[in-house]
Length: 395
Image 1 (tube, rainbow, N blue to C red):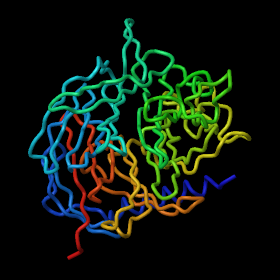
Image 2 (image 1 turned 180 degrees about the horizontal axis):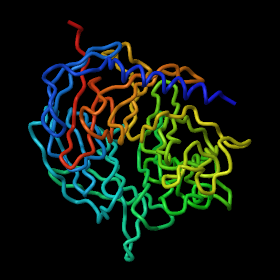
Image 3 (image 1 turned 90 degrees about the vertical axis):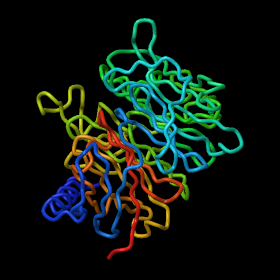
Image 4 (image 1 turned 60 degrees about the vertical axis):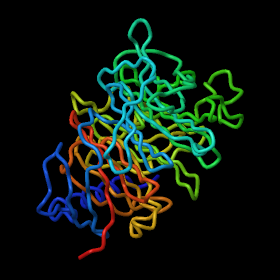
C-alpha cells in the first residue's frame, strides 16, 4: 500500500511553501473577482497572461471547443451559450429539454464529438426532473442549427430519480477508441448506492457514441450489475480527462470533509466510497457514517489524496507545446479554496504540486486545455467568467 501519510505531508508542505512565497503572484494590474481580467504573472516554470474571454455568466459549469475556434459554455440555471473565439459575440441556443436547476443541479457538462466536423453532434448532461420533481443525471445529444439545437436525442437517464439536488457528477470525456465516459455522483442522500452495481449512482459509465453499451464493458452479461458501469465506488467525480497518448483515464473525486481524490479508474474496479474513505463527516468531523476503514483489501487505493482539501471540479491534462514545461501535468480546479493545482506525477505517484491563481478569480468550476494550446477556466460565480491563460516569454 502506498504511503499516503508521506504524500499528504508532501502536499501540505508544498502548499505551505506556496502560501509563504506564491510563485504565481499577480502583477499590479490584477483586478477584482467578477471584473474583466488582463494580467500577467509568474509561475514556477512559465510566465502566463490571464485575460477575460467572456463575463456576466451565471454560474457557468463547462466549456467545450468547436472546430472554428468558438466555444460552447453551459450556465447551471439552464442556458447554453455559443461564444466566439475572441468573446465578442455570444448567442444563447434554444431547444434544451426541461431542466431542474436547484442546488447543484441544472445544465451541466457539454462535450463535442471527436468527429464533429463529419456528424455535428454535441453531448450535454443535466439534471432531469420527473413529475414528483425528483431528479436524475441525464445525457442528450443534439446538433446546432443557427441559434437552436435540433435532432435532440435522449441517450441516457440514470435508473433512479431521487432527492435532494446534490452530487450529479456529470463530467464527460472521450476515449481514444471513441467511447464516451460519463460520471454520475452518489446523489448525496444515500451514499451506499455507490456500492450497488444495480444502481448508476456513484459510478463512471462507458457508452458508445449513440448511448448504447459497448460489448466489452466489464459488467456486460451480469444479471446483478448495470452494463453501462465502467467503475464504481465514486462519490462525485467532477474532473475527468483522458490522456490522448496512453488512453489512461484521470478523475478528481469530490470527497466529504477531506477525502478529495485523484484516481486513475480501471475497468470493473471498486474505489470504495463510502465503505472506504479518507474523508470525515461534515458535522462532527469524526469518521464518516458507514465507513469502515481508510483502506481495505479488494478496494482500489486512491492514486493521491489532496491535502489540504481541494473541493475539486474541472481537470485538464497539458499536452500542447506552448506550455512546454507543464507537458504531462494535470491542472485540477478547486471550488472552495479558489485555486488550481498543477500536479506533476509519475506512473505511480504525485511528485510535486504547484498552487496557481489562489483566491484571484473566485471558485474554479472548469479547467480545459483548448485546441489552440491555451488553458481555459470557468469561475463558478453569479457573475462568472470564462478566462484564457496563455504562456508568454519571461521578461
